[in-house]
Image 1 (cartoon, rainbow, N blue to C red):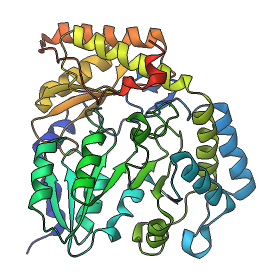
Image 2: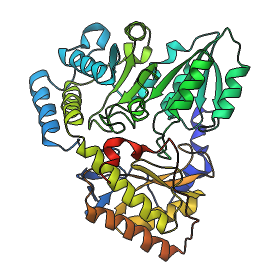
Image 3: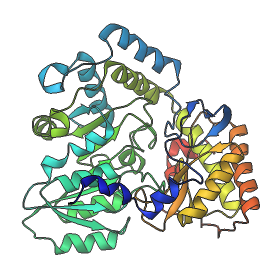
Image 4: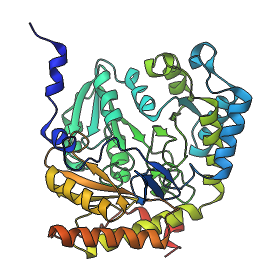
Length: 416
């Protein structure tokens, strides 16, 4: 007789390697703040946190969260639909809609749920075209929908064009993509995606988890970065990166948001975003709108680290953002390098399957505006020492070029 629990022995080879007795990058307990972390009594540089603007520890954000908890309690204890909506939720939705230049926004409890909330849009007779490097939550949303699925090679616009051309002209078509890809740190090819969407009468949905708050002179994400207002039909996003909080958002036309409010199971059947998290996101939005120097700083940190790693011979791919991969290929050498870098006092993310395809393991650095020049030096010194100790030599990756460059934003270029 079969036992459903027998699957516990079916972990992938990469996951078995990462969870065995050797280097263990997963589920480590850390106390992290201001670019550093306390790990098992030892203080290390924290280079695995997506708090790009350093707002989760900003006193204005933490005080707003604390005051909201004292006033409204720790939980709404109900779904948004039936009693969990507070004035704070509507304040944040209105602010975000205005910030992104759209008609309406819908706040969800997590960023993952913001993407799952898209599923009702993907119905029978529709076709969804999804970049293979999209975040797992966007992949799950596509799988949950009833539409036909088409996955194209990462940022392969020629492949996407062929797929769009081969689709039934009468079908409803939608392209879904990350704005900034969470593992490789490269930016979506929005001008090309927009042109293809227009040519093939498709809608364009962008997950702005890693670019809203970060890219563009005002932090409004990829559409502002590429100076293409109106190119994106629907945004999703999260508050767990640039907003120093937790929660998610879907933003676009009032008609679409109204539809999703009443059809998305990820919205209907979950407790509302806690008041403290909403207040924190509102305070963070104030800072995002008024302190562009934070974006300038994090891109300067990213430039120094990326150039330094390339000079050391590490392959950092096409990254132009504060997400920097050190591409290793196989899981075992990646984990050895991860441990050696940690031994030198820098905590990074060791990433293997299923977060990346098998055979494409990497170490991911997530950099922050609160990282100092001393932190940058410690990161580069750690990789230099770890590489020497392990005898790793990697072919340097070419400098990213073209319209994807995130540091092409005028406000960021002015900081050079």
